[in-house]
Image 1 (tube, rainbow, N blue to C red):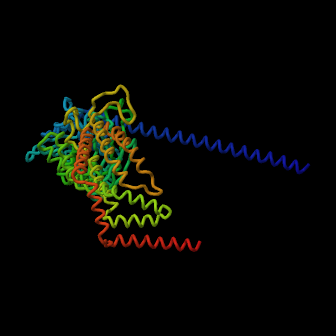
Image 2 (cartoon, rainbow, N blue to C red; image 1 turned 180 degrees about the vertical axis):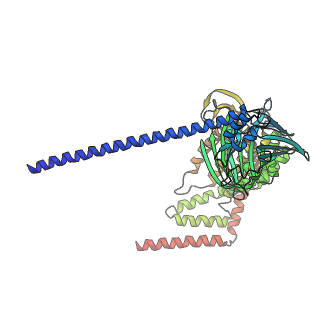
Image 3 (tube, rainbow, N blue to C red; image 1 turned 135 degrees about the horizontal axis):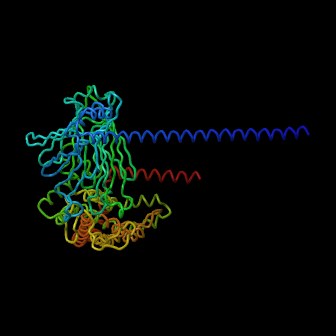
Length: 631
């Protein structure tokens, strides 16, 4: 009985302990929730107070147009030493315009930053539009310095008024914007616009602010820009909208595509907000110690989100030198044109996505100069056709070698099949005999692959070059109104996934051309390459690719620029023509067969590579025999 009583009491004790633990956990959780709620309330109150302070600053400045003693006291209570700037005549919503043959810039008194940037030689959407390309307008951008004063105030320059002074020096327009704490103490933005130039000098410096600003740590700055849509296809334009930056003595990188992308870099010397064919760039001669860049995609549904493409943000800091700010910087608002950007010798050509490694070299040293030369004295459509013909003629020796190699392999195919049948139970011996046959016949089995591999970089380079060629923008050819966008001939009343809501003609023509090209060459390729043990049936694969490649071409190119589709259409046509000429006039199967038989009768000297391969095969064969004997 005592054992049972003990057991019962133990159960009651454990139950009470469990209840107490639950009660303690519940109380702790309640307290934790209360603490979280309190923290959120305090955070919200701080944010509200910050907003109220910003509103109070703006309201105080706006309401204080005349400087009397009461208003000056009120200003000093909010702005401290910078109350002086709000008592000046410039403390109102006025602007100053800088303009040359290429660009018109509007700089606002409030904030001192560029409030409008209009490109005078480029139109939005299409060549018949009355709207010019405006990179900045309607408060889609701002540049702000956050100033910390000695009396623990935090002031944002975007809320404060600068005093403008416009002069001309050696034909250049020089605009000085000063945020003053006294007649001789100020923060200055100086803009210098030269004739016929998209780049303007931008200096940030301070004078006499050692006693006003807290110089123990750098001044934080923020540069934001919501990029306006400028092209016919917002999805195509958005694909090429991204942040590109240079850091650590000439390295360059990009933030990337996606909903929310972010990068942090050290020693940054320029940041570019690229919008496919246009770009806004902030450059600095003294590197920024660190910069945090963010890209947010604003196109969720291209039928609804039709105004903006991306929201770009950069946060960084400007360090003091001997208690003052002194930065030599530049702004660039203009076309993302490789030739224009390359002339500045600031590594800005890297902003144009011409590809990496050999693809970039082909574009920079062949495609860009050649196409630039042709387009300088002929229409863009004709220039693409001539450009394609020249590239194909230059590649024709490689094409010839590829076809010749295929023809030789086709002649040898019966003998290779015979070797395969004879030594089908001995793969090593079959390989040895096949290599011996190639050596005697003077045929290199890799000769057909190497020319094809050489052509691949040129093909990939074209995929990078044409979407980046601003020369094609709003230039028509035949039925295509704009070679930089799709050549719509039929608007569909519905949307097809991947394909889109329209029919483009040049991709259809390119798809037909690649179909006939593959139809003509697939038989020779399959006949040239005998089947290998353990390898997939190339005949079946080629039959699938004959139909799959044109479909992929059609889907992929329907929303791309028609210039790229035109290039691929002409390229495939020319390749078909070259192939027919080579087959008719340069490749004779009987002569190739006779030459191979003649080669077989001649004594052959093994190369070092061939001897090494033979010795390796013989060693492998010997090891196989030894293993067989042991078994």
